[in-house]
Image (cartoon, rainbow, N blue to C red):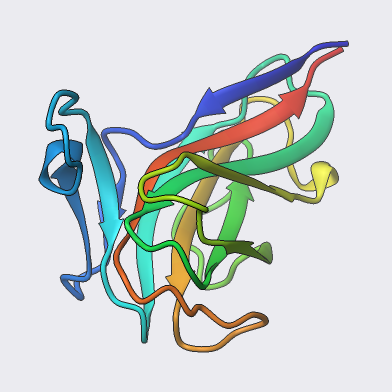
Length: 170
């Protein structure tokens, strides 16, 4: 059995309409301006800012599902609260992609880096039985500054560097 990690941010990733979540080159917030890959910025610390997406569950999926969040910030104090909500849709002409509820909503609180722009990684376990090979997983990831289970106290923008679906195969 092997553990796999696949990126789930992509062409169909869309920020909410608040204007507080947007795509930006890393060189805008970085000091050295050498690497110009993009990050999603979660700017607001007082609301629940959302980024939406979807991915296909890999054919070799067996279980042990989790989502891995890679992030950074210019702040060195406080906590960030991440919410990950999702729904899976299976079948061929069997289920609607237009659902009104989520299948599971999970949250994690992570402390700010010890120095500006350090790479941070946190994972959230998902209910493995909710996923099956070839299903479509629709999701949203949020920086939750509006309260929730933890308290988001980072007084700066948070940069989402990567978002990964991690799982085991047979």
